[in-house]
Length: 227
Image (tube, rainbow, N blue to C red; front, top):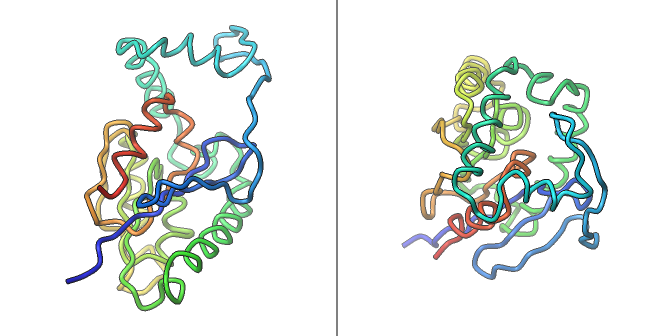
């Protein structure tokens, strides 16, 4: 009988602490690289010109205290915005397409560190499966994940991004072995998705995690844990 998989969840929730992960069996939380968590007190404006003294005030205004209607409006506005964005690297990176190469390099360094730490022989010789959350057009999958994982499932709520990913990740458009493939494409929001139990070795969550309200962020991590 095989050993049950305990997926590693990799995410970048806050830009000031870098990627972090949860090892589901222990529930231990670490930051990589290690930096102290700090309260974000910087004020700013939203796209409607409203002023907020900090992120907490903005979240209270946008989603209230667990108000289902306000939450629905928040997530719906996000989907509507991205539906108007072109399905290109520059589009999904908000006009900062030039950060793609350094982002992939830093992500690969991080992934190699985690694989070496968590799996014998860094996972070589093992059939590895990952979930790419907020996959967009498959930017991270095509440039990084599919080289390390035999199967990559993509989760993306914006339909034209996901359709672009299907094209970008078709076998004829990939420079990888036939043992590596994009397996499943889920057009579902992250806050509504429950990963299949024991399917994933790694769950990759990048910038999209910042769209989630705190309770939905925590709830997703709990759903992704091995029971």
